[in-house]
Length: 599
Ligand code: DGT
Ligand code: CA
Ligand code: CA
Ligand code: ZN
Image (cartoon, rainbow, N blue to C red; front, side, top):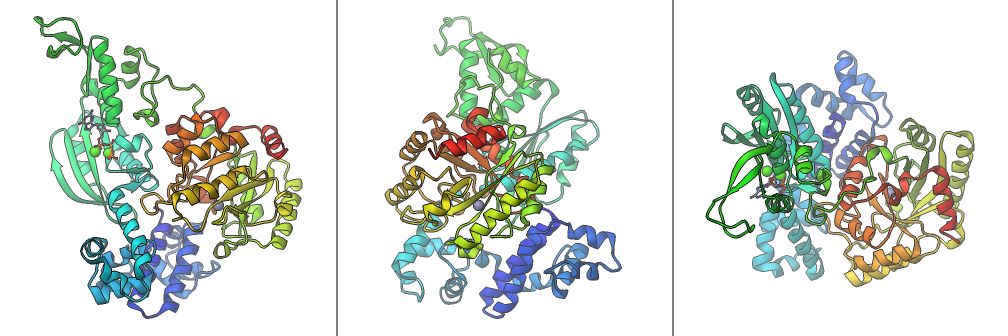
């Protein structure tokens, strides 16, 4: 997390605490505004404070939207690493009470009632109450039976996914640890392994693998890594520790130190998945070899047993075939190397398509927001940024009128926006700018603009934003209507899930992907790591039905473009190839498809 983001998170947290104390809603909304601003701010406030210690305060106040108070807090945080106000708030409101606000359906007033009147101070307390006496909850003012049921579903979902960390938080954190360890003198290799290397949407713990001429140097560096909270085990070849997780909570990190000659085998083993490891061991065994975390070996079967594999003869490792390189192990088993993203049961040991999509293949962004709705950048700033990134096409898809909180455009404003986009497109030949909209799929499946307006757009991304707890059959009909709508090109974040937080719609995916394939409607993999929607398994189902997919960042700021890699990881886990990913197409191919889709 950048300093901007850290301060932003602290201010939001402070605002939530103030809300729960029930005094100063005005102050709370000021902190919230500052938090939003910092989160979208392009320049780094830490730089300002560090480079201009004498007049940092004044310089900060010159930034639009930053007042005296916020400027002071920024200086305080950058110079001391904390905020006194925030600490003071935490003395009055336990952090676990604030966490209750993350349960959909629980607003500040309801949480305050739970906390003050029922001594519910954490999600665990709430769960216990739901299990023992849910009626007592339902009888509280503002709750009632229906909201208690909704809360129960949310708590269950959280418990099931709890302890797992979103990829977007875990990967930068893991990479940072990896870089720290790579600086240790004598280090030969440090890599991420486990589910993090496989790019899963949420991970249980961070696995690091290293190989070092001076293992003790590596061990002592690990014990001093920034953010380490508790050393859990401290062996010669394995260390485990709990770290303060980015964005709150804790995360376990395992470091395994392996000998050089086993590097490839160990990396393969600890990358997993477990299913993949089992399949690989089976393949080795059928070829008269034995695979484990130390290497691929000739298999010596105890002599009295027959040659039959699986006959119960105890296999022993014979001569080492190969151990230091993952690629060489795949080759020794007559396999093309399988990228970590595909080392899951769903893929098996199938051949890997040679045009599996990569980050570099993506040349078009088809879902983005400007200040016209809830984006941070003006139209032209956004377009210029896209050019800097080397994109050839950018679709501007601001929100539609029903998304009032997100600044959705009424029809007249959209018409003017379309004109502005077309005008800019003329002025900048380097970029194909598409006039689009992210139009709400309303709860009944209808769209948020009339066809007469939609038809004027170059590209229509239709997404669900509200009523995300509809029953599955209603959700299926709703999304089918959007997929079949002749003016819709792409269905954006189709389920509306938030990783580990909100389950989202649970439509019948088989029906959706069939309809999408029939209508040539593209389904989106929203690359924002909070969403990753479609998720890997849904995207895989879509591909086997013959759908095309888009990978979009849904950019609201320049930072969001950097989230593309999470979408690509998810797409690769699904086996998406270049030709089935419309963001890799040429400007002409895109333009032609957008037009022909509507014939
Ligand atoms: P996670 O941490 O829950 O997100 O998932 P993973 O896949 O990172 O699992 P983790 O951290 O328990 O172990 C890392 C890898 O080590 C795992 O993907 C495969 C390998 N591994 C660990 N334990 C076993 C085991 O008992 N059998 C096999 N075949 N592989 C194992
Ligand atoms: Ca792991
Ligand atoms: Ca682990
Ligand atoms: Zn969007």
